[in-house]
Structure formats: structure tokens, C-alpha cells
Figure (spheres, protein in one colour):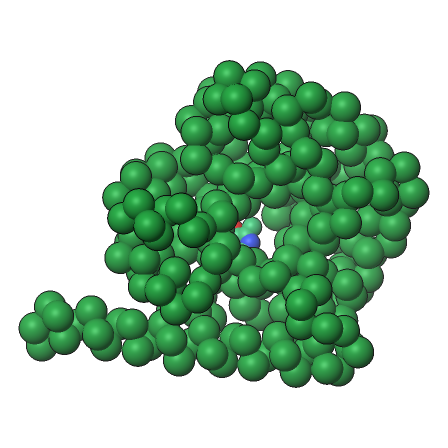
Length: 243
Ligand SMILES: *Cc1c(COP(=O)(O)O)cnc(C)c1O
């Protein structure tokens, strides 16, 4: 196939997958009695090239998620400016504090705030760029294995970290993020997240985002109040192992 032919075939594949995921979200919303307007789709483009990000944007995608600074910053720099201007970039991976300045230069929202140190460095980096950054506290749900699990702060310390994010001058506290632990029913995991989100909103009513649900468990997330889904492989295809 010619490379123009390959690009057209890839656009067709992304378009079909995107339509299928939007149908799943629509059905999950109907089943939960929710409006699809209350559920945002973040397409996770990690491991895939900027040409896919561009194609997705031209198919109406407005939000993308990335989990490695080096990969994401190069990919975003390669986008045509009209595409870049229309995209919201979400960072969903663990990061060391020395990445904060780079992240602050292109990220709109960081979903993976898991300790006080990154609150401080990200706040300072945002101040230096002159632009506020949205921030979510990543929660480690029950049944996750400490240290080797899906990441996030333990339940007993969520409120304290939430207070710290809310107090940071250049961060806008948006809410909570979690990944369902392996070997736990995702519906139980996301119900727990919804409960923690209610505690947090008692003190921070503006923190309305619940970022939960991936390709395999988005229905359970919608049923339990997720406002932002992070969907990768169901749209882009499977990643190389260790994604
Ligand atoms: C990769 C990733 C996703 C997307 O996962 P899929 O199973 O490919 O949909 C969502 N959230 C986080 C934190 C991720 O790292």
C-alpha cells in the first residue's frame, strides 16, 4: 500500500474504533440514567505517533492523555499548530519532580498527583510559565499492592493531599483519579472512588472531576459517576508489551 493509502486506512480504523467507544459510552450513560454530556473522553495516545493524534483531532477528539514526559513533549511539538490549539493535554503517568518544568510547558491537566513534593514543584513550574494547571489527586484504591500497584496516595491521606493541591496558588484542583486495581471488581473499585470523591467535595465543592475507566472497564466507571474516561487501546489498538 502507498503511504497515503496507509494513512487513509489508519484514519478509517481510528474512526471506526472511536465510533464504537462512543457507542459504548452512550449505552453506559443510558443504563446509568446519565447524560453523555457529563462524561468526557480522553483518548490515551501513549506509544502512538503524532500522526495519530492529528487524525484523532480531525475526527473531533479534543482531549488526549500521555504518560511519559519525553515522549509526550516531542509528540506535541510535532503537531500542526491548528491541531495543537484545539487539544487539551492530560498527563496521567507517574513523574519525578525534575519533570515538572517540562510538563508545565505543554500540559493542561495533571491527573497523577500522588505526593506533596510534586504539588510544590508543579505549582512553582506553573507560576514560572504564567499559566495555571489543572490537578487531580491520584488515589490508590483498596486491594492495590502498595509500591508495586497502579499508583496513587493511600485512602487515609487523600484529604490531606487534596487540601495541599487546593491551596497551591497556580494549580486548579479538579478532583480525583484512579486506576482499578488488578484482581478487584472495577465496579467495587469505582464505587469506593465515588465515596472518597464525596468526602473531598464536602470541603472542595469545585473538585467535581472523577477520572476513572479505561478500555476494559469504562462501563463500570460510568455507572459509578466517572466524569472523565481515559481510553487508549480500544481506540488506537494494542500497545507493545509493558505499556
Ligand atoms: C494507559 C493508561 C490508560 C489507558 O488504558 P487502555 O487500557 O489502553 O484504555 C488509562 N489510564 C492510565 C493511567 C494509563 O496509564
